[in-house]
Length: 78
Image (cartoon, rainbow, N blue to C red; front, side):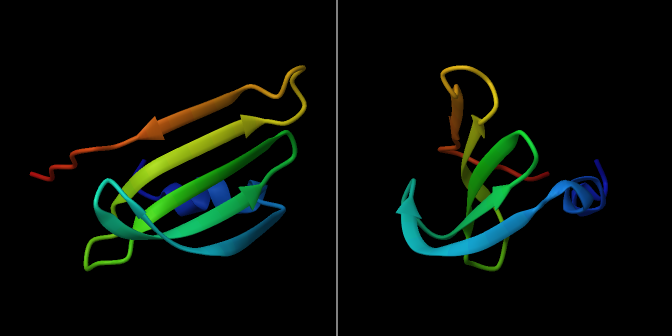
């Protein structure tokens, strides 16, 4: 999507900054968000390029609260 913020922002009920953490060798800002049935966390490089290095999605209303984790170890742009 060309404007991911326009798609996500209206659905977010709350969000917070959880601090700075190193992911895949990159210092990142750790952010957490809550939506109606899903909560998700993202770790975004605090450098010049806002590259996401980790994403965790938790399905809060699904039995067992399944969680999906994506760890990006290499990111290339054209």
